[in-house]
Image (cartoon, rainbow, N blue to C red; front, side, top):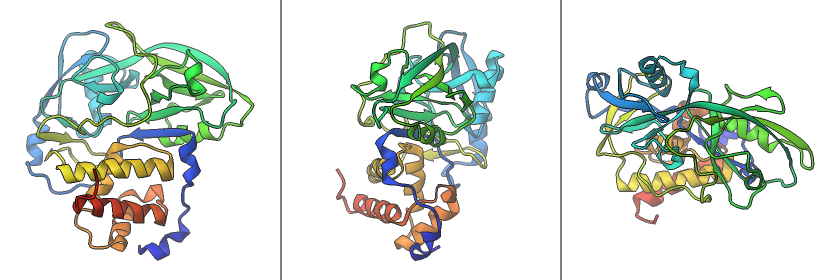
Length: 318
């Protein structure tokens, strides 16, 4: 609907970016693929459990949920045990998390649930310093901990930990932005309790803290072609985003943090894709409502995203 009519939707406050960031794979539209869909269904990927296992093969999946089910079947484990996957490394490297795109030569490592732990924390600061992401199947976990933050001082809490409960409320099936809001809404100067599950470790321990701050400069995926996973419909083989689109995606991801308190590179890519052939911000707003209406993006945010896409096309983004 035109931007002037979108005020009936409830906008998100910029203040949500003050506490928690969040990023994860997002539902994507289904543009025409450069390669036949049938070829995607025949693709095979090698996989291992990150803490050590024989090598398995998975194929015939079109979403993260289906991929996790295939990996679980290969290793005879419950799909709910898989916390997240990394590409081309057995390390719990948060810069190499599997998103909605997999390079055709990528090797998939699955990180499964390990030791449970509990921690009680006094919220002495409005800012916790956490970046939350999820695996697309209902497992929210910690991607980064800001150096010097309240959570950085709580050594029990580590990068890679799955947040299972907040003050006794089970959040295992909640998306990243829902967990982020719950953490933001915790009262200052009050104690709160987290129950966490860390990933199983064998080769080496997780780094306890990230260097924090900004997103990596790495490409969205490896290789010239990728398998695009979709929430609805089959997976498709697509070309990598070009340099202009990558700059636009990076800028839109920054805007998501400012306006909505989330970091989500795949959501940003979906938004850039939605604006690829649009002629004005009203057309763009309609496309976003059709594809991502549940997010109820505020008008100001839509204008800024449209501007970022235009700046990228005009070569005005670094």
